[in-house]
Picture 1 (cartoon, rainbow, N blue to C red):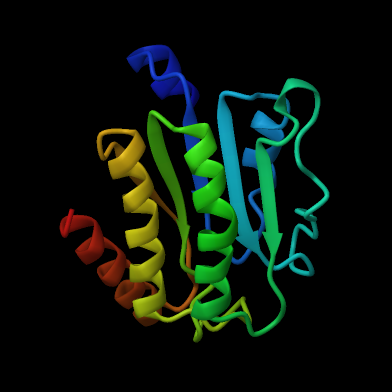
Picture 2 (picture 1 turned 180 degrees about the vertical axis):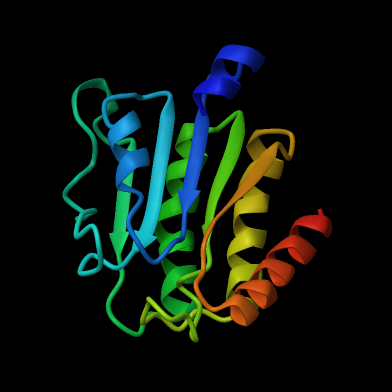
Length: 169
């Protein structure tokens, strides 16, 4: 995000994190920064046991940190609801110049570390929703970064679904 701001003059960056684990490092890096909107779905009870919904940022960054902890067994329907009910309205107000995806696939149903039930179709749907934000606000500028997934076969299938959706742009 900082690189894009400094090297490419992009002012507003949206970071979307759908990893099973909370993106505590990302949250910390931008917690007081209104130029970066951080949105995370994750398991509050999993390591690092952070990311409560009450953590919304501080100072000028208040309101630019959105945590959506999901319950055990969370599925595509819950994830899509979080994106449509919370991410999309926030992005509409923020109007990002670039969208970054922290694409962790340990939220997949057969992952060895997580207990969520996201499917490959679900990841494709989340990708499509995020692409809609990028298309509307950032000239389709989107960068996806692979972060996790601990079942190699499942990871490959989820990544394939994600990349196929990205290529449908």
